[in-house]
Length: 352
Ligand code: NAD
Ligand code: DAU
Image 1: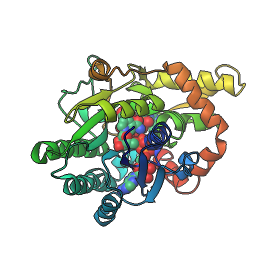
Image 2: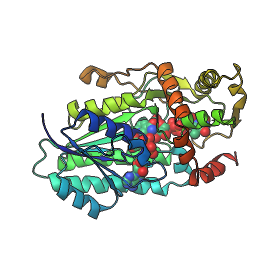
Image 3: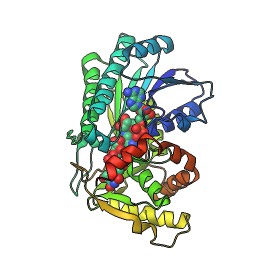
């Protein structure tokens, strides 16, 4: 069994925490170092079950801090990086783009520079794996899906910042030979997602009998994937993906927002012993998101053909598990919804 030390960035966030858990538990011979500066979206509670494992180390730090990265690379001699740290919420990028530019672009370049410096001349066995999003491809009409060769056409400050970071990661591969892989995934749902995102926000509001804000007419379409399946894809791509390649990851699971919210309402009515139709009464159509991308859909046939990956959980089963997790983790929900988040919520929704 090979031993190696991996750096995972953004491991206290939603997808990052599932990725850290999977690697710490599945590869006891790896040492996993998680760097996260614990923004509003980062939460060490997400990793309680692995925090005392011997092969796990948490470092509170910013990926833009080159001195810290230098120190960590010298100390730990990382052989791989799985880069998830980012500002990730589209609505926040609309009201305040600058954090997205600094973290998602400059932070990624800081990591690339330090990796290049420490690995140059010894690229064999090293990998910089950049986790990205399907939003870089832009917005689809009714037909077609995003493939790995779909031209980039990002339309929000968030997706533009992720697209820039993807381009820079590829530039370091072509220019300096840095061994990289990029994956672009569709919308995730599951435990520990910050309740600013549609599914946990709706679960939380339904639970508390608050209006469920649906942007526009609710006709925008997203392709949903259970977060554990994304973490499995990350594991597979990290170990078996081809250097220099891009892999799309998706759920083959398109839902109009309004249909998804109605399904969620039906599930919640049952779980909360409400009368059928009670939760749907909370649906409230609000002002649309600026530049709202109409439809995302991922063609993941490359990943399926090359590495045999596919979603393992059907959507309704996964969504029920997601709902169960939020209902049985009320204290997590209450604690992340207190303080700053309440101010964000009021700014974002009370004016709509
Ligand atoms: P998240 O917002 O839940 O977590 C982001 C984490 O990064 C947080 O723990 C935060 O503290 C940390 N972070 C932010 N800025 C940092 C900095 N400067 N230095 C160190 N840590 C920092 O995000 P997520 O939804 O888990 O997404 C993780 C990654 O996956 C992102 O790169 C995102 O673009 C990508 N992605 C997300 C989805 C999705 O549906 N959520 C889908 C596809 C791709
Ligand atoms: O596609 C992958 C992307 O998915 C990731 O890169 C992003 O990090 C992640 O946040 C997510 O982006 P979206 O903008 O698609 O997710 P969000 O949960 O914010 O919104 C999903 C859909 O629901 C979108 O069409 C907007 C709509 N929406 C969202 C919120 C928060 C509402 O109708 N009401 C809401 O209150």
